[in-house]
Structures are given as structure tokens and as C-alpha cells.
Image 1 (tube, one colour):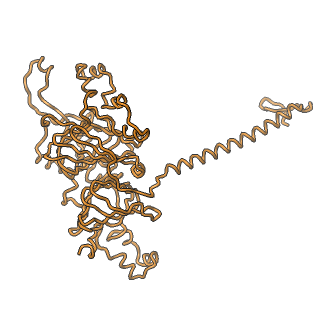
Image 2: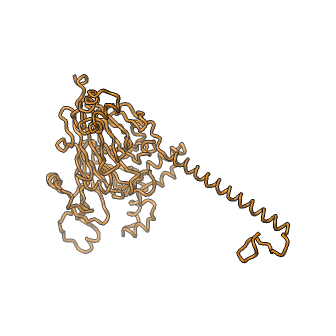
Image 3: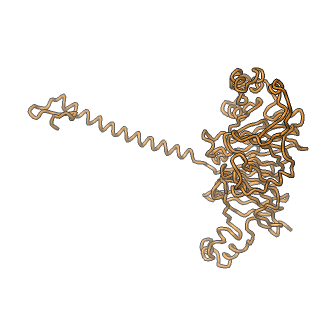
Length: 487
């Protein structure tokens, strides 16, 4: 036993005999220490096991992927929006979601911003849009000066000023930053159809992977939150609870809002949109008048090199439908166009890219994989047989993808497409500013780069067969239809 000192918890005087009570206390302390150590070890192991289970549960189990159609539709006065269920496993794993707006003539999608960056593709029609960035100047103005008295100037404003607006058409891709409010107006002669791709796991979204839309006007009711409530609880919320959903002003006090805008309280109530039942797409009573250059000047303004762009003047639109801008072209098989940060610099900030593919009858898109991105495919025309293979060599998808359907291709999963008799067209959105494709067949493929003897030994074929495997396809990415199919 250690001698007595100021730091000893247990001690015994060397001149005194040990007390039985003291010996029992020492033995009890040792047992408790052993028990504490055992308990601590158990808790550490338990925590490790729990963390391991959590990690396993968090892994994406992509043993089956489906070509999906919209899960539900929300109708408004001036059109409707169709939503794909972002809780499906492949959407959650890729951190993406998608919706489709169908806007009637003179329909106006109310100003809205999202919690993540989005890419918009125009499937059909034409229209006008604006992207609103706080702090940027109102560079579109009428320039007409009219003389009013001080009283008249305080009561009315004849001239208009607003941020830049642009026209768009079929095939355009529009890139919108997280938090930038935007609106869309259909001033064309047919229904306007656009698909909106959300990158929910983007660095710009710091909350969770649920897409959130914040409307600046109207009383849209957060349809996605309502759908999530139905999924969790199996029923709709009551009218009182639903009426609480609205635009960003609806939760603010009338008088405080009136002070902030320096308007009457009744006007502030209209900003809140409490009694507005038109939905998130409204119909303009009269044609909306906008200050904008004519279309020919807009076409001339497209010739940019990116160096002159600033935050406020950054180009956000590019057309992917023009055959003349194809990156890969085979007159007998089809074409493929890419949109990335090199030809639309704002995509470097969004960390997104897009591509457009057109396959003629029975043509084949080389088996390939995306090295650095998840990709969501939206079929715009025709149909195609598609196969997707995971790292275990299992086909997680083997079926047809038809017009209007969506298919997620996870990063590094091998995929091949063959168009149907009607051909196949699609637009793809990728979660990298420069999504890179590696091919398995063709002139620039991984197999083409292997020595013949490596191919022969790897696949247990003769040297002649290995040469056929390597050199039989001279195309790069888009292959002619097999002779038997094209006959």
C-alpha cells in the first residue's frame, strides 16, 4: 500500500495496521474500476456498431432502377405542373429531382426561387423569361421622360424599368442559380412545355435534399410539402392547415409589410395572396407588355466568349437543338451535343452540365459510363431500349424508355441505348460542370486502347477475334444501325 501523501486517494500509515474497512474499500474501488472499464469498452463497441449500421443503411441500394413517369399533377388557372416523386431511391441517391410545367397561352409562372440550382429545358413552344438577381441594375428601361407635377409623380409611375428579360424557344437550356427568382410567360401560339431539373445535393443547398420552391406571389400552396404529408400520414391536411401554405409574404404581418413597401395595408394584404385561388401559374388578362430588344438583336448578342461576363450579365441560355452545334455527328446514325462550363461559363458556378442526343432508327449509342457525375435522362421523342449495369455486373435496368419518361443513370454505371423504329431523342442533366464520358466500344474506347494480346487473354479469344473486338467499330460514339435491323 502506498504511503500517505497529499495526492494519494488511498493510503495506510506504515506504523499502523490496516483497517478491515479500508481494505474492503480498496477492493471495492478496484472492482468498480474494472466494471467502468468494461462498460466503457462496451459503449465504444456499441457506438462503433451503430455507426457501422448507420453507414450501411446510408448506402445506396441501386439493385433496381425504373423508367419513371410523373407521380402527381398540380393544376392552376394557367396550366399545370407534373412532379416526379423525389423520394424514389434512385432520385435520393443521385440527389436530384425533376418536374414538368405545362403553361397555356398567356400563362404566367409566378416569380419563384429554389433552394438549389436548376436547369430548364424547353420541350415545346416559346416564351419570355426573366431571372432576378438582387443587387443587379434595372438595365431594361423605356427611356421616355414625361412631365408630371409632384403630386402626379407621387401617385403614378408611367415608365417602367426592370432587369433583363429574354425570349426562349424549343431546345433552349436555361441555367438558374440557387436563390435567383425567375418567372416565365407564354407569349407563343401553343402550349409551352418545360422540364426543370433540380440538383438538391448541390453545395449551394445547405439544408437537406428536399426540393423547396419559394414563391414571391400568389397562393400556390406548397404542393410538394402537401404530397409529403399525404405520404407520411395517409390523408390530406385540413382546410385550415392548407390555407397556411402560400408565398413568402403570406407569413408576414399586414402592417409591417405595408411599412416595408410604403403602401396601403389593403395593398399589403394582396401581396400576401391570402384570397388568391389562381394557383402558381396564372392567366394574364391582357398580353403582358415588356421592354426588350427585338429578336434579331438578341440573336446577335449571343456571340460571346465569356470573358466579358459579370455576375449580373452572365449568359444563362444556350440552344441544344441546333444540329450545327453537334459535338458528335453521324449522318446515318444521329448526333450528340454537350453543354458545359466551356460553352456556358455559368455552369462552372452551378456545377451542372447538360447534353442532347438524337438517334435515328435502330442506331446505337456506344456503351459508356460517366466518370464524374450522376445523369438524369428525360426522353423527348420516340423510344429506346436501355440497359444499365452496376459494379457487380448486374443489369439494374433493362427495358424501354419512352417519350415523357425519366431515367437516372448513377455515376460509373455502364449504360447502352438502341433507338426503336421511331428513333429516340433525349436531353440529359449531369451533376458535374464538365460531365465526362468513357466509352467501351468504338474508336476512342477503353477496349480500343488495350493491346491485342491483353484483349485475347482477358476474354479468352484468339488474336484474330481480339482484333475484331478492338477495330470492328470505327465510329466514335454514335453507331450505325446493324445491317439486319436497317434492312
